Image (cartoon, rainbow, N blue to C red; front, side, top):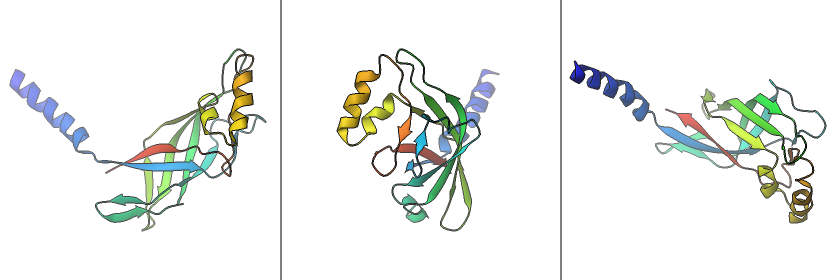
Length: 155
């Protein structure tokens, strides 16, 4: 009986282990801001890929391909370093052959963590000074900030 249970466990885990994961680097294609109550649960946020995504030598997703993610959770900033947070799920990308690819990845954007991606650097300095009094808002500007996230495609 123990051998049978062991074989079943191996078979169940084997399917998980055989799933190939391909990383996809994405960056925001729109302003993401919690400063003006623009973000709500269920909103669709646009991203774009930062490079070509290859799978077994074949171009799967080209650079600058449109990626969408859905806001699953949103928490506003509060007092005493309580920074805003956005959780994104249900990422969708169109492949080069027009097939819609879905990613099971979850991306969490935290206002305090995003400070390191702000440019010019003087923006970071002033925001770090005020973080103890009030938690940081999320304010990502694609034209100046360098926020890059990784989502995964499974094959």
